[in-house]
Image 1 (tube, rainbow, N blue to C red):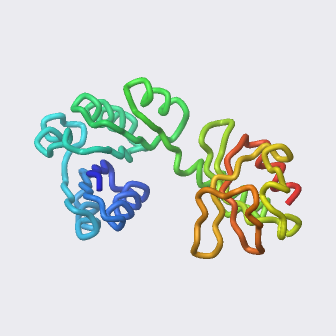
Image 2: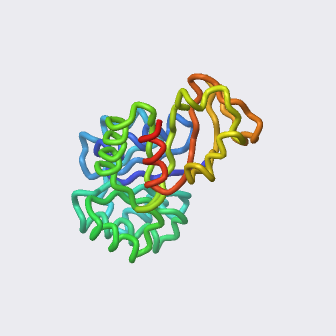
Length: 216
C-alpha cells in the first residue's frame, strides 16, 4: 500500500483520488475550493482545503512522506508548476501532472515531473479508436510512437495458437496478456489457442496496431 497526495480535486483529480482510495491506498486530497473538499471528504483518507502553492502549507501537511503526488491543476499553469516544483523539492519520489498542452508538459518535465498526462487528449484518442474499430476496447498511448491496446481476437484468429499467428512477425505487435472471461493469462505461451471472445493486451508501434484494426 502506498501513500498518495492528489492536488486539485476537479473531475480528473477527484476521479484519481477516489479510485486510489477504493483500491485500498492512503489518499490525501488537497484543493483550495471548500466545496470540492466537502464533496470528496468521505471518499478519501483525508481531505484538506489549502493553497497548494504555499510551500509552508505543504510542509505542514507532511508532503515529503508521500510516495506519489498527482498534480491535477491543468487549467492554472502557474499553480501547476509551483505545486510540482514544491513536491519535488520536498522529496516526493514520483510526481504525475495533468497538462493541457505540449508546452505546459515540457515545462513540467523541465522542473522534475516524472510523468505528464493529457486526460482530454488521451480520452479523445481512445474514443476515436473505438469508433474506427469495434475490436479495440482500450487504447493507451505510451508516447508518440508506441501504445498498448486491448483487442478482441478477430474471428480469423479463433482456433489458432499464438505461435501459429506469429503476431510479432506478421503484425509487429507483442502479446502481453490474454483475457478469457474473468481469467487473465499474463504469460501466454506459443501453443495457447485463442477462443471466441478472448481479449489480447498487446504493445507495439502505433502504425502496427492500426494495421491490426484495419485487417481485423
